[in-house]
Length: 364
Image (cartoon, rainbow, N blue to C red; front, top):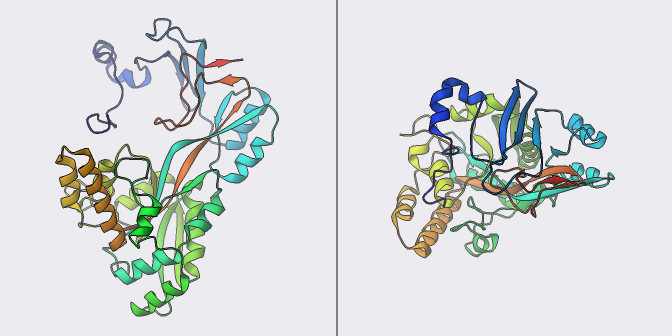
């Protein structure tokens, strides 16, 4: 499906309702799901009621209220008092361990997770030097990052396309190619000296205040400091961060995301058309690489699925050779629920990136 469907294309909606409501459709949506829009209280909540005519059967729940609560402590307190049934948690081991120990609650850690990648801006000195990029790669320990975040939450990632997608590379395949860049800070210092930076250098970077970005980036800051690279961080709000990195403000960009297949990962982050600011269709090519356009396009137009996967893997090997980016880990999703919440299915993974409340979900 990811090959033929527009994954960012939105939802199926009735044309008549869309045309009748006009601009009000965005706050009075009509769709095809098990629950129908009832009310919207700005900055507070959305209220849904069950769709009696849902094609898979009448939902077991009478309705769902989705509350906007940015404070995780307030969310957890609501779960403990019974005011809330399901909450988004914190993607950190300490929070998972804390909530697992609370009576009457269940913690769900599930996939597919988001890829966490450090993009190296090759248009800026000294990152333009391959030796410097290699030094940065050798200075960073993925294992230290995963230990910092937590083994229940983070999984090792060694290439830009996750291994469970067609054309993804496993860590074993990357190691076999000699491109794992396992942490070796002595080697990193040697490479910096060879590049003309025996005493290291400083980089100014913006980072969002959002914890899943900021905390690992601060960990990377501490790791790079051990080889003489000083990251001077300016913390900004999340929206400003995304604006700034798309304005090419950072020499290093930490980015987390989920994409449905290798073509989308490679096109949006590594095709020359996608180079921020100057690309033909500026998107999220923060590294400014132009090295794999031919492979991206060759894979896109081949009808042989096996050959296509092989081309995608070759493209990633080329990216690792030039250290256009440094894949870090896959960050899973964390939600908590009351023991009595039965989703109606076994939660293993969700492409919506949150648990789906459907016609089988019930409170026991």
